[in-house]
Length: 552
Ligand SMILES: Cc1ncc(C[n+]2csc(CCOP(=O)(O)OP(=O)(O)O)c2C)c(N)n1
Ligand SMILES: [Mg+2]
Image (cartoon, rainbow, N blue to C red; front, side):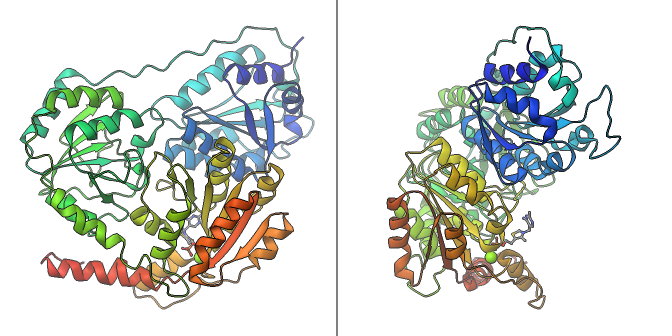
């Protein structure tokens, strides 16, 4: 007779789950035993947060939920940041947590926290399994809810007595397709009319444009309309950055070079914009009109209140919209004249050989060693703005960054997940010395899994981004510096390889050698962050003075 845990694992197999990340506790031991007898691989991590970031990234890259498992109380609570990462980032994920028996307990309240309630605001659904017979239905429902637009995390708590209980051998619920309706004809007509009337149209690709199911249809729309586009940080790569229509990425909310195009546009077609992202532009009473095209209606905010919405499956809806306007757009390229000026600023100082290297040079050199389909996964720090702004992407989801929760600590685990899914592609994690240390213990997991992965650590011995904001706000330099371990020795102690970049010209050869030698390789490089203020504050302020705009 099967046990509850067998039904749970059979239900996961029924969903096509091939691996589960996590740190089990004694309350999960029946599930672990059922996993041992299954086709699913249990991948141990060294912290639950690492497991959650990996599972969420699995969801982000495949469109199917990644799965992680923890014990009750302390283990489950270590998933909170990962849950928020998946919720804000719209990444499908299933979290399985253990719990003491619910029918009787000989341990009183030991380790008991109301995990299901704690996760309510961090998930799309959080519930306890209270009977074995409901397991197939609840698992199917959890996967459907996690995957449905807008995707996100679901938590299922399995108490140990339900896991161990003998159960009826009940049938699994078959998977069923998620069919998303296409936008209504009337809204497509209205949007087409606005596009045909526009004198200076611009397309913006947002976070939902990067969903695996979105990418093909969006490329077609851009090609057929020939309207220039820019992207948000999380919308990079959906349409290749080499495209003659690419106008840049909005890493800041306003006043960057790309905003020269945004501010002059009279219509922005915002495809897949999700207001969890730091605003790529600020809507005001005078600015451009906005058409919101996405799977779900816009979240109306003070800075985002579209005048028209095209809600439905993005690819097919855009195809219908392109049918209405293709060949009739006389002003499609009106803003293209600004393109050269915007993009040329991004290559400024990209080849300068100053030591330590500038962020621009680091972005430039990384691009040189990463093939078009190679993946760069960022942690959160100052360099994220530079990568978002300056790194050109050619394939969807090849610059994995988190501009939603913007948590530190996800860079290494998300890169590890990419390396597991795409062993034939080059994968690089780029982390600050602060963020890397938040989950650096997963180096052991990476070595144990024999991943091919390079980790680049930018050393400034500081929480650089906050130190920079402190300076911009005219606070004295205080309280944001720290010391680092010797990263080469640190890598070696895990059985990884370690290198230190000693001169600017050495960065590319060191990265090349690391990728060629395979395995897990950690490289540390110092970074000259004086460019943060020179470019992102002084230069942009100067530019605004020249065009006569108000300077904040
Ligand atoms: C978990 C978490 N804690 C704190 C922050 C606030 N924060 C954002 S960037 C940053 C500093 C990052 O330092 P580091 O990783 O060294 O990158 P750097 O900016 O120095 O390149 C901090 C503390 C955050 N985003 N996430
Ligand atoms: Mg730092």
